[in-house]
Length: 233
Image (cartoon, rainbow, N blue to C red; front, side, top):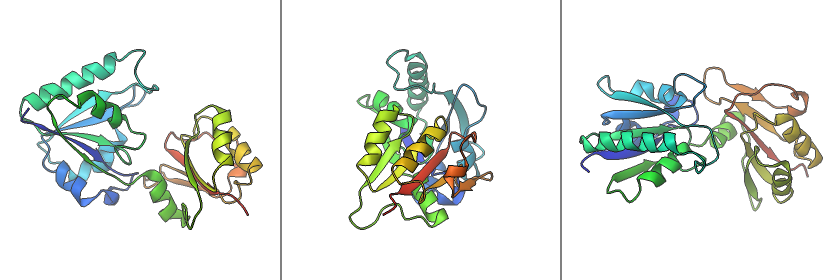
């Protein structure tokens, strides 16, 4: 195919945190794929990158169901794949925008796997993950020395989260929006709540930073919420 697919990480929220490589790629795109969920209009990734997009660039919104994998029903994924392939066959450079880094808990990973081996020129451009931006914004070292860092999706079964916490010195807990109260309880039990900082929508206009998470039980959190913490010694 003549067209090229770019997977572009746009970082955590601040448009100035896009890499030079990401910006240069965005400026040469004919089409941008803007991923969104069924429940919300617009695309956060698109809004972050908007100032770098040429007026002539076509914006295509694609809905990606918020499911674990897509083995049960891959209809939406297959439809999106066909649409991307059709654009590439028209000799268009297509960019898939994703929050954070494309290869880190990203919808792009599934798109990348679907399109691999189909004769497509694919370039993946890394981006700054949210937890790196949170560490810098809050003055919180993520990991240092010989400490062990675990990156934990907090929406896993509670037993797995507990197991992961017991084996690390520092932790990044992602996807804490659904069960933040139980996460806070587990961190308290593991003596990891005192050093914790919670950030929601880091780098965006409505950014929220919480430094005493034990007083925040019951708060409804945005999907883009992450906790950085380390064990109190």
